[in-house]
Image (cartoon, rainbow, N blue to C red; front, side, top):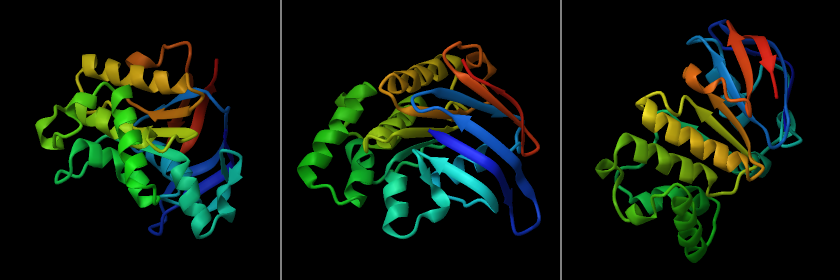
Length: 221
């Protein structure tokens, strides 16, 4: 469950990235976040992952009020939210399996379980046969699937994706979107910021449209 109550985000230079955002996304749903470049989509996602904090208002993710989190509770929250980025953010000096296992290593999970869960995540995105390869040897679509495996290896309740198909051709983009819908079927709440209007017609997904930091449309199945 994701809830925003009258949320504002103002940066130090005075720019208002988000203005009076009130939003409810049910647990287990999949939602597309759309709007022009600079509309506030990335900022909205950053508030949910605590990469940024709101200037005013309440942000709740997985029934937790993020404003009250401190220390270890912030780390626990971040483990409950998987993030997928347009530019993959993979470590090129580590194998595919090690990239996927990284969140578990940071969380202190033992080596044997790290390997087992990383391989299971790679299997879900059909890349288990490339576990020992390095990211540079993979295509853009494969690198994005590694990023998705890394995002879900910690079994998050919520999955956030910021323009995950922005650098992919339509065929690869469709394959990536199928993965998001697959994980949504496992009761993972999925929120995807995208410019790809081809996917917005999918009746299974909600659509939230932003313009100049404000919600101009909010539709759910």
